[in-house]
Each structure stands twice: as structure tokens, then as C-alpha cells.
Length: 172
Image (spheres, rainbow, N blue to C red):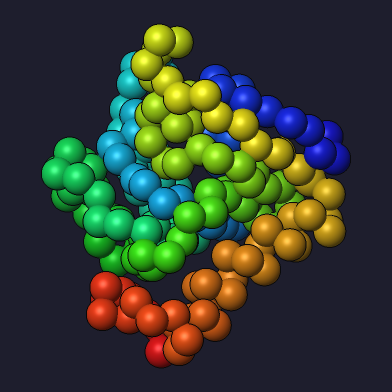
């Protein structure tokens, strides 16, 4: 699977249920909007934050860049998983609008889907958004997606940004 187009529920199936779950070393996620996404695990729906918490406990590094503060349901779920408090590397950047998921530097998704149930295709057919993106293992494409994430993470755009008063997590 070098590169393929995916859409709607396939984003949930391929990115969340396959790619993220198979991570060995790290998962990087960038999203503009973030909500209390639930995913199927052992025949029941559980908070995706619980999955990330388990990954952190198993030594997998998780980084998350998001553009705005999540809602109260996300916060309630977050507070249920103590490994996230210290283990989740998180950054709020109000200019981030790109959506990407990078796993182990080998596979990546980039597209329109935010980290929400409706965005990732985890909602029922009549409640999910129409989304699309690219899933790739092509090293050149993966490196490009990683570079964009890493530049924001490292604060390369912070100095000239002009929105620093809204950004409590600027690394500079």
C-alpha cells in the first residue's frame, strides 16, 4: 500500500482501527477540532483517549496538536485516564487546520477529517461527515507530512504568527 485515497468510514477503519492500533513506537496526530471520539474495542465502544492511554502505558509515544480547546465531554474522558496527564505530549496551536496521523514514521494519513466521531467516520452512516484523504507508506509523502507536523511542534512558525496571545503552548 504505497498511497491510496480513502473516504468516510474507511478513514475510521484504516486509520484508527488499523494504523494507529498497530503503532510500535509513536503516533503523531494533528487536528483542528477535537472531540470525545469513541472507537470499537473488544465488541464495545470506548473512548479513543483510553486507547491512547493504553498505548502510552505500553511505551508508545503520543503527540497531539490541536487548534482549540476540546469540549467538556472530551475533558471528562481525559480525566478518566491518568497516564494521559504526564504521558500525552500535547500542543494547542490556533493556526493548525491540517489533519494528519503519522505512525512510526512509516505510515501517514492526511486529509480533511478532524479527530471527532463525525470526522473520522466512527458515527453512524447518517451522522458522519463526508471526508476524504490520502493514506500512504510512500517515504517521500510520509516525510512531507511529518515535516509539516514537526515544524509546528518545534515552533518554527511561532515568532511571526501574530496570534501568540491565543497560544498557551508556544514552544518558544
